[in-house]
Amino acid sequence: MNKTELKALLNQNRSRLGSLYGQTQIERQIDRYSQLIDAYAAAFNNQDCALFSAPGRTEVGGNHTDHQHGRVLAASVNMDAAAAAGRREGEVVFHSEGFAIKPVSLDDLFVHPEEKNTSEALIRGVLAGFVQRGYKIGGFQAVSNSTVLKGSGISSSAAFEVLIGTILSHLYNDGQVSAQEIAKIGQYAENVYFGKPSGLLDQMACSVGNFVTIDFKDPQNVLVEQVDFDFNHSQIALCLVDTRQDHADLSDEYGLMPAEMRQVAAYFGCEVLRQVDPADFYQHIQAVRAQVQNDRALLRAIHFFEEDARVPLQVQALKDQDLSRFFELVIESGHSSFMYLQNVTSPSDIRHQSLALALALSEKVLKGRGAWRVHGGGLAGTIQAFVPLDLLDVYQQVMDDCFGAGSCHVLSIRPEGGVRLL
Image (spheres, rainbow, N blue to C red):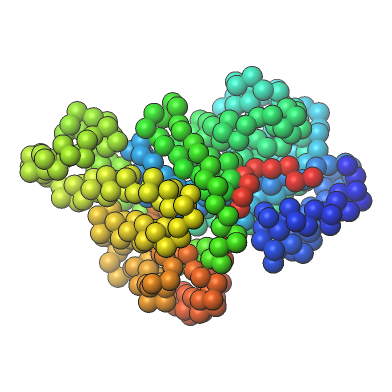
């Protein structure tokens, strides 16, 4: 479609935009996509394109369980990577707001070690993943921008991978590549080409959409279920609070979480805790403690067993439309992360405890009404809160007063993952 037709259709699809982004965001998104259409026409001297979107994601339940082959609950959100894109011969030319991305040739889909940690690596990896799985590929040109916050646990790289996969699916495969296949291809690109050993949680939540529960018991046959819950009519806002504490120099501490859990699993001759019977763990806890010589490892194992069992309860609460029970379980998850997993404060920097402070303030405002918990990896970064709309102004003000203006980001759960919008 040319840009005049696309802009007219944007106005005719206001309900779709409202569903994806929230009713208050419709005008903003019409302006945003109109600008992308104009930028595409200017960049490529070509008015014919299509519009695509891939959301970021939020972790709701299953904090640090996926690396032990556990269960998680995640959801796509209304922050996304959006693009205007059309076919091109022989290469991918991708213009991303704020990033310089070199063209990627379809004749060279090998891993380039010098491209590690770059957008070019992700594009090349997704192309290669499509070929390996028997799907068609072709060149395309695109202009994109993203509203996914960097370093917030919303997974900007996964949103980018899903966006590339969604474009290839619709431009060259009649839109027939499933959301789960696109997620797996995105993970492959991130692991092999980008050089980050991520699990499948981020890509699957971005690609599938809405609430999604994932069971990693068999990593080669991951079980994925979309949970149909209409969050956008629940009178609840999803807030991510950026406490603006730096993640730098915390890699070792993040790595100790799975490593210590695996130490406990090793006592039972297992690789990960999902393979261990919790009853056996508690029955032999004295002997495990004597061998492991690390009480924190045992506490982290307790967190895994409790958190892994909690995810199906959260899913059932959503299916039952029981928000009160769901909130109870979210708070339980947060307490477990704080007390047992111990990923709210860094033991190497006890003076800075921004996540703990944000959680304490959240409890003061929301106790009895909403829910709050650490978000993602922890130790620094963001917390997550489910806030009743009548408390939203107060909650935002409290968080902004403490952590700075704009620290509280109000999101909604998006009902769809990677899509061709028009």
